[in-house]
Length: 102
Image (cartoon, rainbow, N blue to C red; front, side, top):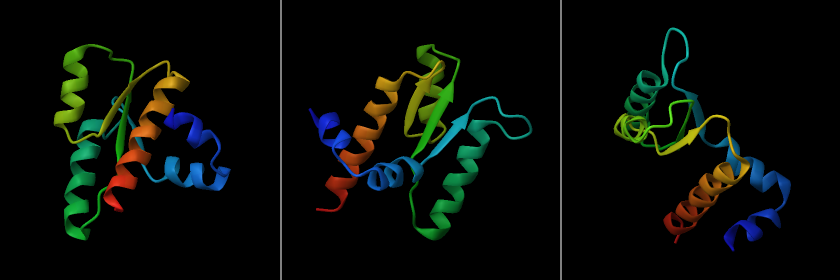
């Protein structure tokens, strides 16, 4: 399994993969995760970059996930955060990075 491969990676490589994304809580005061993502995406267009955004929310309904994805987030995780779910997201990010570098 690909996760097994990731566990054999040097820690600095894993940290680089994990840190090069943004995790957003949907109910942050002042600027919620939806609005923050919209602003991040606007800035990315200006600089020609794309940073993975991971939604982290206690809202676990299907429409909540859809709302996050429509707001421009790449991944959706619910609280309490399950390690397997986080590893699944990291696996998808690594695979996408590998494909884009070919």
